Image (cartoon, rainbow, N blue to C red; front, side):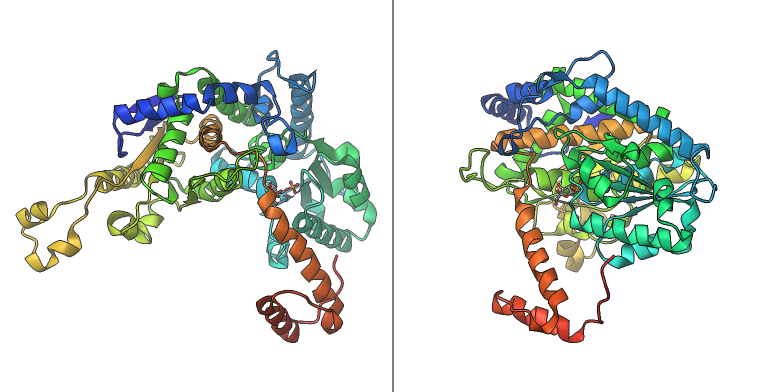
Length: 508
Ligand code: F6P
């Protein structure tokens, strides 16, 4: 029970299933129309039904010459033209040709964005730090908490700092608030509004809003409607990644995505890595009753991967109705969580081994380290292999007795085993491997969404909170006199906050 593709080796043998189970799950996938739905996605059909849009992230990594038609237009030449513009800009920043307002080269790049406009590049820049420009410091600001930007800019000189404002819609409150505060910080240091031209670029699909903000649209890198936020790390949203690792490595990242795309499109279902991964997730979730999915990269560089996958998986498949509005009659997306190994072992692994809940795990590891310290890397990987073995096979009371463990401790020390996990093993954490790994999860999420018949590409559930936050922000700004018509709990919380909050000045 293993399959290899795009430089990844996927071992799914430590699951509670047999070949017969898998054959039945593949039948289920066929009955749900997975091959047809997959082909429709690659073809550019409006698979995002509720927003009547294509989900063509796979076109972002299609090589020149491949044709992908959306709304009657072959989008691949446009994709490559944009990649070339990004590469040109990234090279200028990397080699010091791009100058700040006072003529100094850029040393700090701060990406301002949230959700899909932050998590992918933040994760990729950490993951590929060993392939990155040593003289450039990459930082990421996402949280509307002013502490985030405050910390990111602390000790920096504006004249050496470039801001990339990333927002597909260019109306995300968190991002625009931070971008305005960053502009204020920059102009205050450099003493001239004109400095914005040298220190701010944007990634967005909304040129007019970018211009209104004050960023020259010659410094705008575009996005198409058919790129969803959480599927955008390989689009212009990856500009910070490209600046960090360079255009050649970015193309290697795209090649990794592409290799997994081709595998997903062409391999038979029972040998198809994303399909198997997705079917096992459905098996664990709907048949065995697991509610969560732990992601455990045995790689310090991949420490942001669980956060990235939380958005990819849960914003895509955390849905209660089908694409046509019917109640889904079974649980949908698992709750994704995780930490890198070995840290997690000294915190929550106790529950994985002996708790009463079923918590399937994805282990991710690499044969070679990028640090040159192979012996210490062996210790890391010994832990990964040990954990999946211990989860699967446990330790019985008899084995403990045979080892001479005192009888009063036997019950406490028994590990039942039979706890499911997958392991993804690759030779090393390269741009190519990272691309393949992310595409594996993207297509697994798609597979799961097809089985639940939900729209994996919309996210209506996030809207209500945004609307309420706007209303409450206006009430907070209006002070004590503002009428409040919330529930009693919310009214009391707001009153208590107002009574104790520091006096607020003007927003940037
Ligand atoms: O609120 C959720 C969301 O719309 C995500 O889907 C998206 O990735 C994020 O906000 C940021 O959106 P934008 O890039 O438009 O600022």
